[in-house]
Amino acid sequence: MKKTRIIIACLFAISLAGNALAQNDMTPGLTGQTKNYISTGMPILLVSPDAIASGMGDAGAASTPDIYSAHWNNAKFAFIDGDIGLGTTYTPWLRNLNVADMNLLYLGGFKRINSRSTVAASLTYFSLGEIQMTDADGQSRGTMNPNEFAADVTYAMKLNDELSLGATGRFINSDLTNGQQVSDGSGYVSTKPARSIAADLGLYWQHPIDNSQVLAIGAFISNMGAKLSYSDDDTKKEFLPSNLRIGARYTNHIDESNSISLLFDVNKLLVPTPPITEGDSTYSKYYRNMTEYYSTGVMKGAIQSFYDAPRGLSEEFQEVQISAGGEYWYKQTLAARAGYFYESNTKGGRQYLTFGFGLKYSIMQFDFAYLVPTTSFSSNPLSNTIRISLTLNFKAKKPTPTI
Image (tube, rainbow, N blue to C red):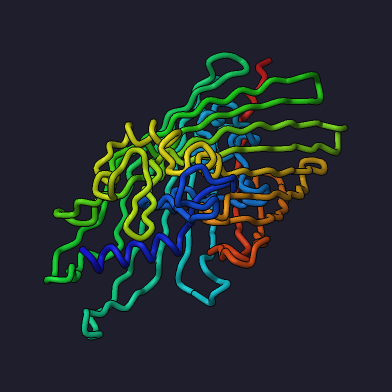
């Protein structure tokens, strides 16, 4: 599986990096800036699927409920405004590097069952374009079109007038080799698409402070499921990007024409931190080597992710990502957005500003987002890229009065 691992590692590196806040070193032999990325299978599941939250620094755990709530906090669907809604987003990938055939597509919809319950479904599809395959001697072995997709169904219910709960079931398919045989150094082995089933659980609370102000808090655990394996003899199964997101929102309807919202999210992977190997030494309190790391169970790994970092508590803080953003609406027709996203240099170093705007007319809403990196040492696949979302939201028809 050697070549398969190289291909997968490269695709993962293109897709995403790691997580948040540099601190002092606590382990002899390691420095505070020693990089220790957390690699997962199918990291595309963590990428913002819409241009609304993308314009606010990827903050969405407690943002205003919308068609894209399945990604940010499924419990928000219970409070969504509307009877039926559809939404889609197109995200170009690596356009900054002149790659023309990599794209992320998202399609979602919801239907309100009654005043307290809503169902929703969505599809995320990621195409990595066409890749030329070669063997160890550089001879062509044809081309492949790797792709990944996830399909999910959500149910959200109000527990009372201010609190809601959401649950999602998700089917995941990651086909990075199109079933081709690849070299493991001693011969060729067969590969297969990696498949898994995962679940999300969300909690959302929104409280009207008065007639013009709203406070909201959300917590969301996503992608809890079985590991991904790309071969029947693969002993290094990849963790799914299980994730914990907690956030808050403050909204002030200033007057009939103007409103503003401020958002703040913290985000952490529920995936164990791999050991650090420097020279002949391996640093980890819980894993003597990578074999032990990959053999860790999903639930055990999620629990240990809060305390298993080789550098101790300082590194645990580095694994927390921070998102902050704001949104302004004029007459619920024109929106302007801005935000900032931060993660530690030792966990991937993604740090960027985001900007966006929206236009709502009747049942249609168009949203656009743009990302600008703030560091020169870390690239982002969405650098200087415009993301576009289209949303349709149908209100429930009012009953015709009888005479």
